[in-house]
Length: 306
Image 1 (spheres, rainbow, N blue to C red):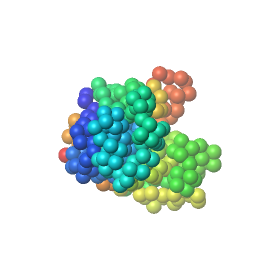
Image 2 (cartoon, one colour; image 1 turned 180 degrees about the horizontal axis):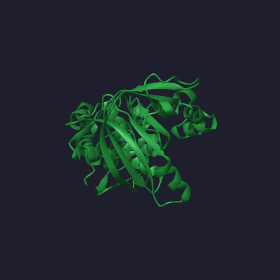
Image 3 (cartoon, rainbow, N blue to C red; image 1 turned 90 degrees about the vertical axis):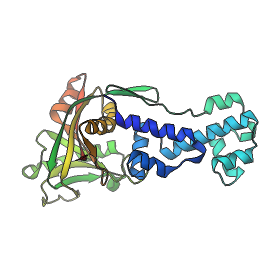
Image 4 (cartoon, rainbow, N blue to C red; image 1 turned 60 degrees about the vertical axis):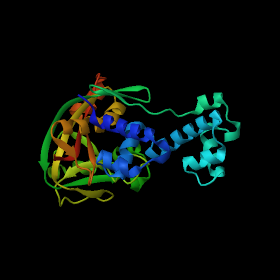
């Protein structure tokens, strides 16, 4: 199985590398068919560096090569890189290479240069930053859903990371509050909780909004201290992915699901885009506690028939 999301990102990297000093961000949106703001998030997710950060570091690396060759002066290189002045260029250059342009040596260049990224895909794994990521698509189904109400807590309300939000969820008894709403819940029979990510506004992370909670029928009363968000009905891709650890599950989910839905004649729906990561007792909790070789997460992402 070719992982199309990775192939697509490699094509974007190749396009950038073809003319790094004159990046056309609109062309990236045309090539991917994904809104630029969201694709910047996807790029960050897959490559572990923001799109803007990648372009900046590659430009500075290329500028260092020009300076070492002696073909151009600092002012010329600064203008070519898109900096308004040689002083602003020098500040950025020193941030990456630890010395101003005039003091650059070949040894310093070798220690601080940022080479082009290369993403390798084969079957159900890919190599990112030299690390082989392993995951397996266990199953994938498509389902039409009605509107659902996600009741839970948000990272924005607590100023914590996604991992820390799970600690808040259990330590402050929000899981118990949701347990009292069991008769109103939808598809949560084997679930200890789910993570919901959305608001892909820029490239500073994957999603600006992260929630931990459970899905309920629309109209379910929201307990005090919790938030309710409407998840619009429509077609969703429901996948189960297995891997040896949580990091590989999270890192492999989008590439695997987005690629497989295309093979099946679907495409992910990016307006709006969200994902649900469903932590089940049978697939995640029990295997984790027993030291099993693999754990699994269930995922839901909006999609449409092509």
